[in-house]
Image 1 (tube, helix red, strand yellow):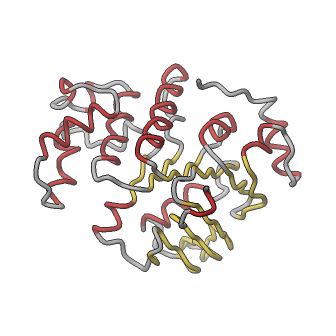
Image 2: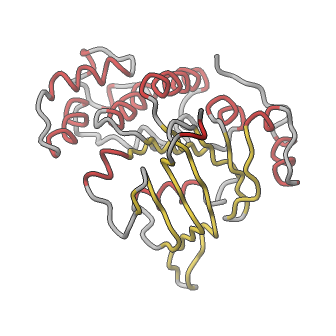
Length: 258
């Protein structure tokens, strides 16, 4: 049962801000979220509502915050150590920007293993490519030799190669062609089932959220206005007016992935 599992993510009264010439800009305000091990949790809302900033705070990319953050029952402080990144990995929105243009796929996948002084790197790289549906022929290619979907598969392989337990997915398909989006989402679903991973997914696409997630938090103006199960989303029974407006704006979104 899901309720018997421990918390993989626990955020309590999280505030995140950035310094500007006009003073601190609060990008996240008083957010509290609990995500169980093995759960898929979605963050949805309009652009600028603070969704991606929450992921950045967890990974240490947004260093100015207050409140409490814990991952895998370990409280997070000001810095993230190497152990943190073997538990948590992030897949970014733009596969064209997230891979170094002058590094081969092999270097991209093997460098994290070398930092951890892990042996049997060749086998791990080959297996990682296989896990994301790519063969060994892709190993020594450069990013410019790959399609957008292939680049995102490499980004997913990089996140998986360290055996991370939690994947932070920041709009992982929004930069891809529609024809490729379903393939990547189905790949992520299959990997989650096979490995028992936990996902924290940011998306503006209600169809993606409905397909991928067990529960969602709806954000508006840097705050959470509602937390709900995706069944309520599918049956269009939200509690807040803002969530209802998102549903109306989606014009009866449909599940687009098999």
